[in-house]
Length: 179
Image (tube, rainbow, N blue to C red; front, side, top):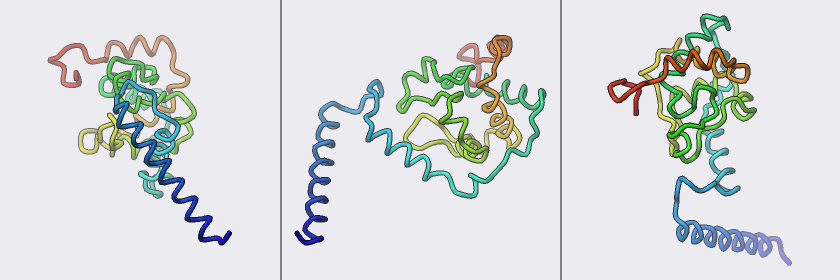
């Protein structure tokens, strides 16, 4: 068979498969309660990787890790990020469980293997079609870099630190960070 016929048959088969998948999605709906399919996961992961400009991947956190810097990030995280990500970074919160896609476990390799610049970019610019808002203009540059330091610290967070963070979490509807 000629090469163009093989390519044409493959493209037709892919179009039929995509149409079938589309019909399945429409029939079952787009609930945030469903676990994403492998295709949805691949598309979302690829889109997130492509969304970070290459110059950010090379950035390193300019703030030196210190007890004070990590504590500053920890306090900021507890107040602004914990409603969706949880103090321990697991994403197991009322809001986090209701989001689609779910917030990543920030202690896991998927987050920890990102460069400092990728984490910084995500905090500053958010992630489209997810619950992650852009914080550009609401966080200062040093606050964002301290958050990156704290995210790096999450795999080693202690029970004492988690207990301390509970005191910084938003408490009621009058609290500006309460959603």
